Image (cartoon, rainbow, N blue to C red; front, top):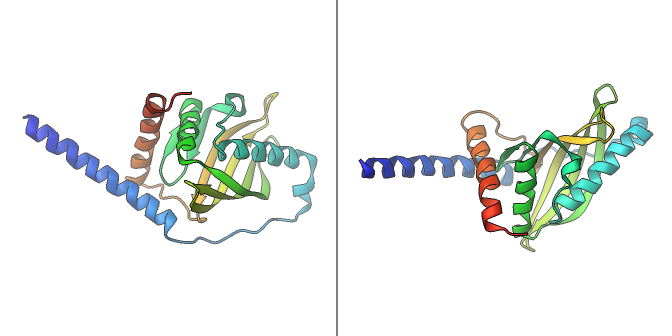
Length: 195
């Protein structure tokens, strides 16, 4: 009985690793359509510049290994990339605490556009992010950040990072594998990385 359980766990782990590998390969090996900065008048309005400035401040901290201020995230905030789907403030914070291990450094954060997605109280900021990990691995990403400005303090409700501008594999079973990675990151990061 123990042998069957071990084989089942091994099979599930192999499937999970394969699906995660496909998600990573899809985003790492191909190049999507690169966006250029929008020069429309709405990008220079005060309301959109506040969201863009807030997003740039948060992204510079996150992607340079300094973590995230919990007050900048909604309780149900999500972070989605080719490796993981993190749901909730705690998972998102732990995901970026784990990123410190990779010695992240951004060389460029360019705001491409700011869009109103629900009147002017909810906005989406699109940024091009050029990052470096382990002092050698360079990644260009499209970062899509949703901002909710309905409260006293604007908060991020979702981060979506598309490596090489490739749309993420969001269908089953890929989303399930990435969700599992988000849960694992939240569980293991506090055990491995101490402040």
